[in-house]
Structures are given as structure tokens and as C-alpha cells.
Amino acid sequence: RTIVVGEPSLAVSLAAGPVRTAKLRVEQGGAGAGMELSGCEAGYFVESLEAWPGQPDLRKGDVICAAGDTLLIGLTEDELEQRFRKAFENGAMLVAGPFE
Image (cartoon, rainbow, N blue to C red):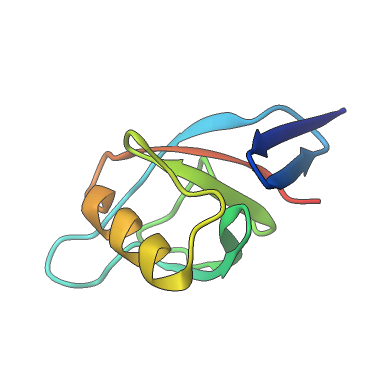
């Protein structure tokens, strides 16, 4: 099953299952979220996840395509970082799925 998200000049496919919501865990005191992310046309690709603070709703290979009420698809690196940063807090809602 493939879900295609279409923007005026962009098509992004998320495959191998439904897009799902995830709750972001952010450790207080500057430890962060324990994720290594890289920008891609679909948002932030999850390169790796650390054990602490743990992200039980995310998997390596997922792409985060929305954070809070902000779509992360088709953005430049700067726009992606700015929009994700605005939603970056403990308990923030994300939309993610396996990236094809």
C-alpha cells in the first residue's frame, strides 16, 4: 500500500503501511529527543534513534512529514528546520510513516 501526498509540483510516497501519529519525547535540560534526522523532500528522515529519551512511536527509516499543525513536505533545509523547531517540544504531535 502506498500513500501519495501531492503538492503542486511535488509527489511524495510513504509506503509499507499507513501514515500514523506519533508523540514526540523531548528530554528537559538540553538532552534533546535522541534522534538523528536528515532533510528530504518528504520532511525529516529518521536516520537513527537513541534509547533515551526514546521515541516509541517512530522507527528508523520513517519520515516525519508533519509536526504540530505544520506540513514539512517540499521545504528547503532552512524552512524545514524553522518549522520543525517551532513544534519541537515534549508531547508534540507528529505525522510519520515509512519512506519509500
